[in-house]
Image 1: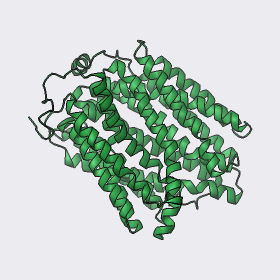
Image 2: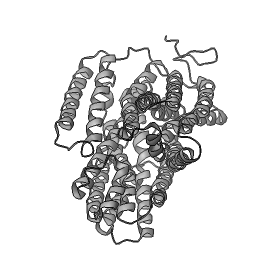
Image 3: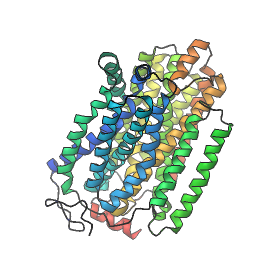
Image 4: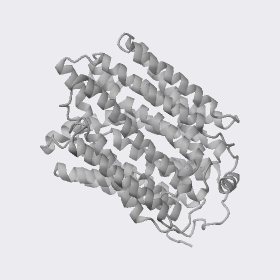
Length: 503
């Protein structure tokens, strides 16, 4: 038995899981949510501080890399955390992730040059990439599948809070204190999360099995992901889509993905077991979440450009205008999570939610230029509520369909493809906006709104196509959700494990 994650007070692997009290479950949830908040906040707090960082470090040209490199590393390592936690336990994996994140934050705060800051952000992404997936996996370890949906609202609340609080804190720290404070703030929060995780996660049920980590498969996955995300990030922004660098990155990514697929079939213990991806519930749920969440991410990136360039709002007001889109997902997730615990056909609500989201997105595509701002806000709130109903169902269905010792791998894989979906759809939206407006000289997504306003380009008709693309994204999410088998959610973790093993 592996003892890497063992302590005197910790339950040995394979022993019966003790019944956790409500207070113990609440303490565990608090710890994992704080760890998740660290990772989510760091993706939003830096945006408003970027201009200040660029000026003080004397390097505006490489500024977008501060965001891009975190996206690259955090996305690429997500499946690695899932597999590692299945092999060595959630607790030790969570502690490793938090320690790496804290170390990366200290390196970011002390960075004297842009190059050092970019390297430090890469390290920070390595730590933060697994925290969100691990938090969802840990909840799955302690809460029965039938009850698990209602806890998904906490995850949605964390993302909404970080989305609203991050830009405000980032701007305040950069303007009134120093940009490094946006990284120093992670240190006390990180140590609190480390302390809670160290003590509270000792009582987690353990399903891990001693395995060898497929290092070659991990290297192929990371390389394929980095090449793909670099191509999507640079295409249409830094280089034309048909340029040799972008096409070369896509070709390299395709080749590496092919090698990774071969490795999955040949390796004795592959990084992502074929049985996980071949599971029809996991496959359909992951694809539904990929397109649904990916479209949502694309809207959050480009709606500020719409509000500034089409509706004439200031940068600060355009940020406030995103609140309905952020808050609605929490409402939808709450409704869906509570419904899952009470009804047999739990897919009906998210199917209806996606249909409503598609209808209102079509309304934006047809009348986005003529609707009042208040009407647009109402439409965005309806879209986000509809989408929010999908997220708990797809995640819980994925976890309900696999054996406990594959829970981390399945959850990490789901989050990995959701991130890829977001990058892919952001790239599609960017190609529509840049191709339709001719704003190819914009150096980053944040510069598109300003460039459109300065050049006087009318982006109203361009965003009609963006909203049509969003409609297609929600439609694909609906199609995969309809194709997903609606397996009964077990009322206990033991029954869920037995059913998953039998499948």
